[in-house]
Length: 262
Ligand code: 9D3
Image 1 (cartoon, rainbow, N blue to C red):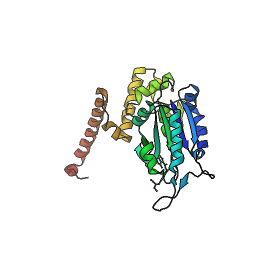
Image 2 (image 1 turned 30 degrees about the vertical axis):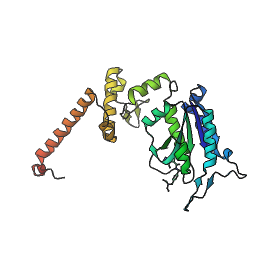
Image 3 (image 1 turned 120 degrees about the horizontal axis):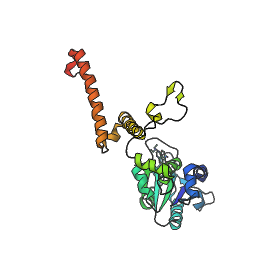
Image 4 (image 1 turned 135 degrees about the horizontal axis):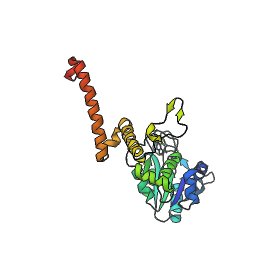
């Protein structure tokens, strides 16, 4: 996959391309990155990329002409590319969007700065408008790195066999179970006995239970939107029974509070 990034801060991407899985993806020929400096597509002596907003107001707007030229050049270099504008007004990035982008032949990321980019760029030259969440960044660069990282690790062959197998079995809508490594005892806390047992089936069952309870406690919204299998439903029913037993005991001890008042 060819990936172009359009930015006025191309150096910000040097470290991103040069580390970890992203670097491996480049070395393995899975992605071909291309960082383009929007400033290089300006036509004026001072290489100006922003201008004052029509209608007044504070802040500056990214000029359309350099961006349009940079997008055209990127499109010529990458056939079948879609353009992705990183912006606070965008659709929130999700794993599903990352999977969709990972199926494209090429991607062109546009990193906004200032108050935003001229609306005529968004209307005519942008296929996706993506945000990475409801908080304010200083520009689209870090957001583009987040989106690219999510996409790149999904490309076939980028993750090692074990890593991608783990992903297939467990990116299925549950949070991960907790993890332990040596030593067996750390700050007076021991590793759960089952993990030392060597019983792989028992370990798998324990991890599944832990994933389910972590998800229930921290992200109940994930369980509501997910199909539970038979075992998961049984685990939840058991917890429900335990909770009901506890509440019945409470009611028995405090008959006055049976009315359901909170
Ligand atoms: C004061 C109004 N702000 C709009 C919500 C102005 C504004 C804030 C931040 C305009 C641009 C920016 C720069 N942010 C991004 O370019 C950005 C972003 C973000 O701020 N949060 C989450 N995702 C993204 S993607 C790009």
